[in-house]
Image 1: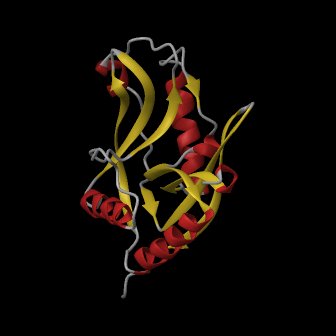
Image 2: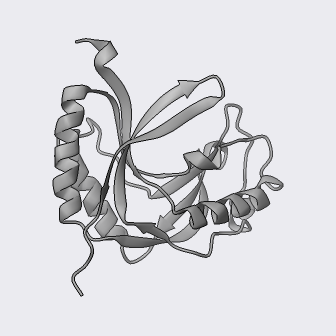
Length: 190
């Protein structure tokens, strides 16, 4: 296999510009309470639907065709902000995130399962946790659930009205995500 023909890809939903601005404000408020973290650049905020890893150009073409079919039969959905959380646990917080949920979460979970059916199934099935990563830590400092519960949440919901295939490239200033393929979801019939 020619590794030069591969790109590190994932499928995600991006926030609107207005929601991204609101996220920046909410995260800025949280920064004073959560110290010792490496905060992500707001341009990298996204809701990951499926991480794919290294994908060849041929696989990417197949994936884009599958995403086109999937988008043509999937209606837009909105998700509400539910809580702040961490992976793997508050005692060892390596990733800090804002969680999403609500009435359309089952539809989003179904969408994630359908994305897997396009041909990139996990060897280990993981439970989908809708979230937006906002910070990371290489040397975690214990956080309490109480600290997380006191943090503000965005007021406006996340609208998923398109799905995007992103490339992930490492640079000296951090990871850069670039959209390589975007498909709008169908509009509901009124």
